[in-house]
Image 1 (spheres, rainbow, N blue to C red):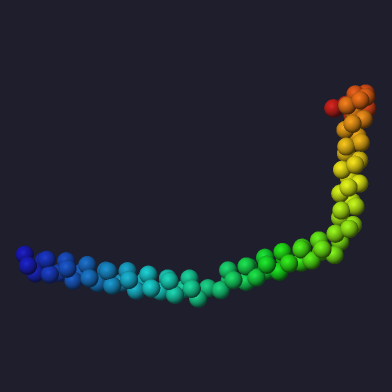
Image 2 (image 1 turned 90 degrees about the horizontal axis):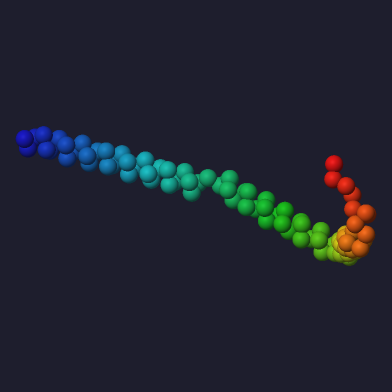
Length: 90
């Protein structure tokens, strides 16, 4: 009986050791993998480019949005005062 228990104990120690080594190797792989860092850098660069373009074209963007919203509000107020101007739904 004690040989059987000793065998089970040794077997469990071997399995635990193998599991520990596999876990250590997986942790090494995760920390050695640098592809995620490249993606983060690319996203930061793209955000920087977008902010730079927004700063460079601020006046044009503001003018375009003001024209767009004035057109929308003009059309909306025209439809409210004269419902026949509304486009019919197909």
